[in-house]
Amino acid sequence: MGMSFIMNKIQPSQLAEEQRNATKLFRQLYSQIQTTLALYDPTELDVKDAMDKIGMVVEMYRNCAGFFSLVEESIESSLEETDIDRREDGEMLELKVALQLGRSMSELRDLAQKSTYSRIEGTTIDEFASKLF
Image 1 (spheres, one colour):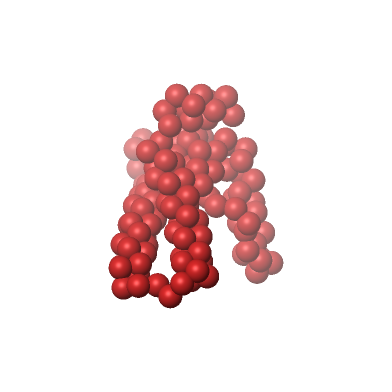
Image 2 (cartoon, rainbow, N blue to C red):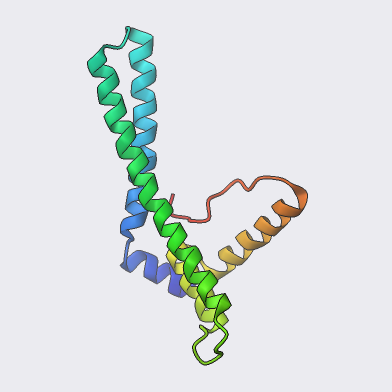
């Protein structure tokens, strides 16, 4: 856990900031729309303004989704590598993924266990893969 903690403190991720901003902006936007609807009939300008903000939030989430796709591809290519000399060491891969997701290795293992259990039981997981949200 020490290495993960240090890396997350020393190198705050731009992705983490984008995720926090997207979540914050989405909540603010939702509140603004609710307030506008409660106070008066929205004008065309209100609708355009809200749609512009929604577009920004969608774009921020799309960037985050691209990051997770990249992590997935990295894991898959590592697991599919047939040349043992070129294959990434399992512990190093695990550490790399944990750091990318802002988790310790034990937290990553716990999440993997929850994920497996949820698939078997057909339940949903109540947390994101990334601790950055």
